[in-house]
Image (cartoon, rainbow, N blue to C red; front, side, top):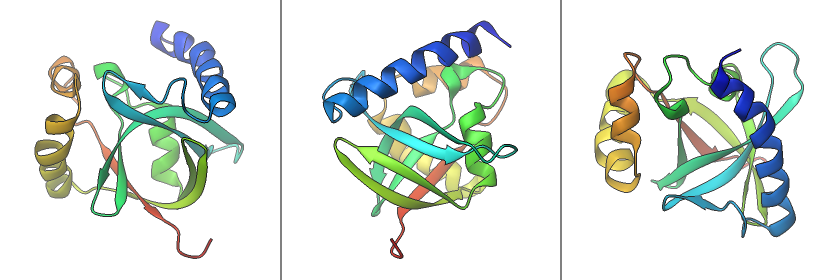
Length: 145
């Protein structure tokens, strides 16, 4: 387990609890990027895991970016999203079910250029720190819920 993994293992539950208790008033944005709580089933265990994640609104959906601060490994929560078809998000005090789709390379490149680097601070720096292509998932409100 990397040092970053160890920090996140402690920090994420604390940040999530503060976010929930305050309806997003505490932890609702980081460096100007809005934050939501993402709950997704573990790809092996099926156990729900909740993490605070920055997001961008785009075309009626939400974009989440698996940057992991520019680490060379994909974050566990994004690996879980890849395996999931659905998740739950909390934005402020509002909770909704969403469908999950990971952007293909061409779409990801367009979203990265047109949305992420224009609206988010620090993401270009994350990309410069790693050889991997930082993935983007599109979360769309689940009309069935």
